Image 1 (tube, rainbow, N blue to C red):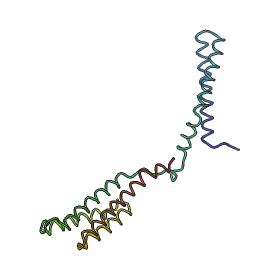
Image 2 (cartoon, rainbow, N blue to C red):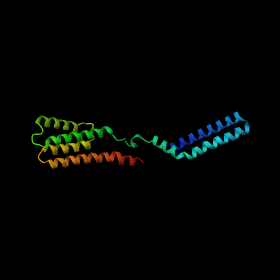
Image 3 (cartoon, helix red, strand yellow):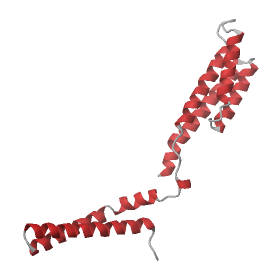
Image 4 (cartoon, rainbow, N blue to C red):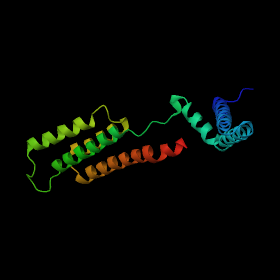
Length: 180
């Protein structure tokens, strides 16, 4: 039975290192003194390379296993662009919520309310956002659009922000743990 490729690669590297160490020791010993020192240096070089191969086997095999894994098994890194876009959506929704429920009557003009609403909808509908963020943002926009209950809108916003944090927790904490 043929051993797996990472083990065969380690065996080939070990052979090349041992042969190179032996040859280099023999040439150095021959250049310095003669046949006896050449044999001693060749043995030391081969022994040193063999010891290196024995001590580094696990690291080399794990390196080649990681290198040769199929592409679909490699977890994707966290998408920083999507995280940044989700933060922008949160900011846009918060501005729209502040315009919809101002602290003072008449504190926000109709034009400003319309502009903030348009920005919030554009940010929430951006195709680069993950689907879960789009759905949560749509639910928050629906609660804000009704405009009757500030507490319900605040609850929807906190749910959206909590959902975004949960996604960040999954992508930053759990996925790297699964990789190991």
